[in-house]
Image (tube, rainbow, N blue to C red; front, side, top):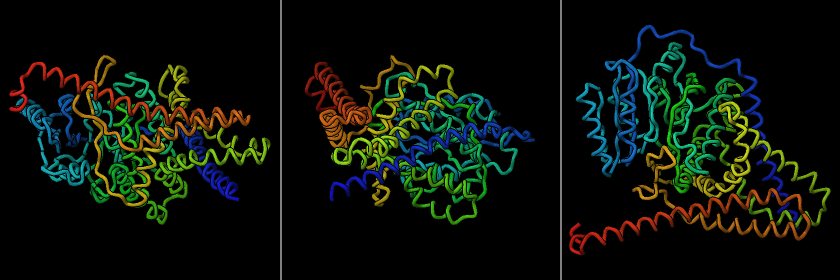
Length: 506
């Protein structure tokens, strides 16, 4: 009886995962169906407006100068542009930023250094604080890992000739896409979000969100929506939905790009993903009921539900993983035919759907998209491997556990020859890696069990799970150990050069 109860729960979880995975097919359908709705300029502004560029930073010593320099190099009338360096740093970043700001002030730029002694509200608090003294009718935000393109304002500002437009978002691209296997997989994941999801939602008249950076806001759209609020970890998603609920229209420009740096440290990547997962569920709890009660079209409400709750699928994937062995015991009892017509079709549709979704994003964005077929199995494995990490963020949101905004370290990694291992910042490993290791071992046992009992059709799916959990766990541990070894080498070198009294004095 208990075994059949496990099986019922397993199929309920599997079916729910299947629904979320099938939604990817729908996104692709909407993308191709709405090609004719690509946003077009409906005219030009009679006069160029004043624009404020906000650069929120916190301990970004390796990239802050690159960010400020590129922002000052944007092609826009200097008399209509003011730049705010919103710095909450507690390390030498503050000195570097102040020096860089001073250099550009001497060149005639209207650039201000704004330092807070606390991190109230984290990034949203810094943006809110900066908005009080911002001079612009329009607000552009760039995170520290971005390199603004010179013509970005001239390519985006005239969309605001339509007075209903509240925000314009550009597509992220990646300076270090080819740095490692991990960065290549991350880039494909992000491409799926930007190339397919954002485009499909925006061009089909559904809500989509500002991504926290590389976008431009009409200041009025921020203020009428209630401004920046910091009761979620995804202040950008929160403000986006509040603003669109107020009637503001958003524009996504798929073909206008903003280069960025993606995490090379898997532990930093995991903390970023967990923060995004937690923040999206916090936003769902905050706004979903309001959205459902509104007079918005049904298609907007349904898509908002899938968008805001999508990260629940990580929690479901973790449950599915834990239920895999009991389900195989039950399979032996119910026989081959029943198994073939129940969970195997669901698993095939789900896995093929995910690969299809990401392949479409590569086909639409890159001429060499066929070369990325090789990465599809590992992309699915990485998504599964992240389920422990992201499920933790989802559970924290569901149970209202407060956590700090954990920044993603940036190292100015642009080429393969660049190194990050010996640099100051690092992603933090946590105890969840032990569960990831356990699940890797657990699926190794499941593969053996499936083979011994001739359940061969399950083995490819089990391998995807096994590889995903082992990859995330081993890479997390390897990179921590590697940095530890490197740090010890530095320490030994310093000791060999300094005498004991120098070290004590230092």
